[in-house]
Length: 260
Image (cartoon, rainbow, N blue to C red; front, side):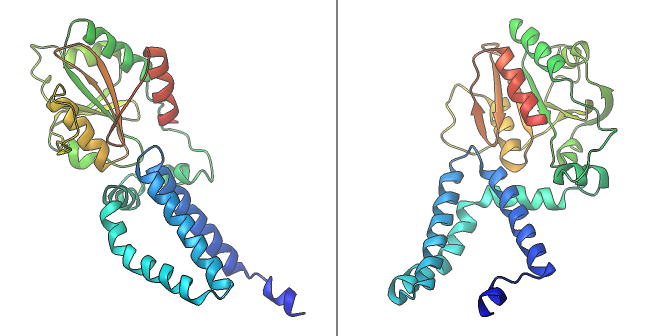
């Protein structure tokens, strides 16, 4: 009878497990593909070992691991500073205030009315600008709202097309300085000023556009495309890192996957 009582779950227990699973899932999404994922996995392994030693009543070993975990919580705040910032930004994002998009993130139901970003037009524009060595910085909003950055530029409400993007970054255009922000296939702002990354490991050949792309992707889950004014090469930036690709077809698949 005691065995059955041990495995008896209430509705609250089920909700508790589901909430923890959702929390771990979204935190995993934030650190996936970054160096922090290795630290995250290591923490999970140490915590599981700690629980096993507790269950086996290995007092000395479990107390050592317990002390390490308690002290390590302060270190984790420093290690996962960017990831925690992104997570809190996702929770407090004004986009999540939109009920439809909130449910879309949790995948509890399908939502309509959110236009798919025309990533092909964006990449074709980057390729064309690259051929003429026209510098460009394009930031695509995902879950985190970019309104705080968009407010630093000129507000727009223009549907994404290849000619529009090329005309914005045309060298004699008054809008070509700074970045453009795209959300739901709409160019919502131009001449946007973005935070520049202070990362010292960025190669010297990359200029302010690349540092700005890294900076915004460190602080949010946005993705960025940069066209170099010196070389004409296209760079794809996500999670504060340069994502390598062999050709534009592979780049299209990478962006399509991220936007879906």
